[in-house]
Image 1 (tube, rainbow, N blue to C red):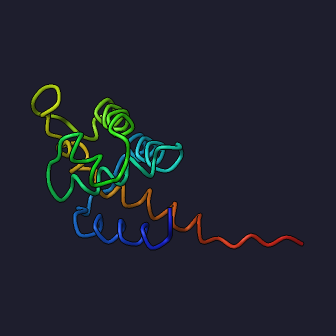
Image 2: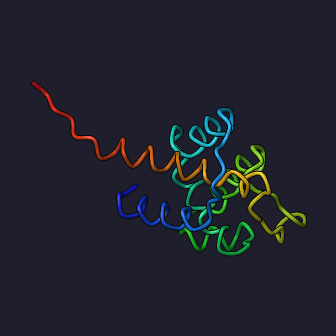
Length: 126
């Protein structure tokens, strides 16, 4: 993940975020899903795409230039944690941002902002 990508994501989320303070549990969940796990950056990329329009798994895999099965895994994780929901079944199912995430998009912005700050801290060794 590059700093330029984080800044781009922050700008997208800033434009979508409401001025609502998220609860602690929601903040922890979002921070964990998107910054504390190995697949967090991929899940964040999926969310950013879905903020713009709906996609099915195949379309997401093409847009992200990732393996279909990898995208399928991440969408299942996001769906299980109520970040996205799908309409339809099997191959043609379309994914959308959940109402829960729409309401708490500010918490996602805060998690990304915290990650950005963490990445920019200079380590000083004495």
